[in-house]
Image (cartoon, rainbow, N blue to C red; front, side, top):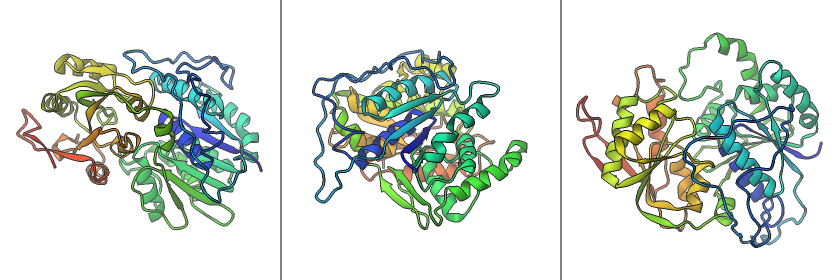
Length: 415
């Protein structure tokens, strides 16, 4: 078997595949420095999807811009490091359906091509017959791949692919804080369930249970198979699994440092959309944070609804920004506030790495129990507390204390 194959379904997954590739051979492609002054395109060149379809899913709304030319330094090869070029890496984008994700993935795909990677856009959810067509088209590359890289072990699509092949080497890169739950569940030998979902098996889960069970076994190390978790998050390595730190070295060497603005920026979350946090509590806390920290911008999560964002803009006066790249890249390019305030999410772990040495302060606000919806998973509070509590030591903790039903925030203070 030859070559390496990555499956990504989100912009952050593709960013972290780029970071992983950079650690394999920082001084040569993929991840090699472009010529000084060479542009990095933020709008991808037209490329026909693997299924022959077209992509009309470009994002709408305010954009944070696209990357401009930015020469990067070339890392020196460590003493004793091998000089052989890495095996070719092909990234397969299993395209989602929502326009924001598709737009960000198009831009990330072009950045990956600029770094020397081969990118294949696969309309994996393009209607009737797309699943069978995708599996047929990927059968050959799957059989010949020496290493497979995935970004979401909870993805039903990825789990199905894992039942059809067993790579010799498997790498899991971050797709948000779910990596923490994945490592914990794998270490305990539990079935794979996203943290914000209730544990009861519905009809769909029952039908897919055999697929999930086999995929979990394929995600575990075994004779003839190695497993690596490439992460920026604090995870405890399950037995036999190698955990490699993602320090966002590619992001730091490729972009920035950013211009800093006064005041603060807020980072949005999709906790309302996933049914975890009450919409009314969330809106009031955003307003309180904006007033307390002099925030002027609200960086929206790609899954936040247009209605919710419109209400935030009207009620708080914040400028709502829909980033066209992952926030780590947007922040590194700048401009960015001197303080970035976020709800519990991956960025409280990744932004301190991406913005190291810039002087930007990151703060996380803890989720109070009364903000949670009655239908939220019983694991939600503990998981969110863990995300906030394990953030880097330089991240400030903001505590919110309830003050009755009229307002969920009594005061905000640095912890």
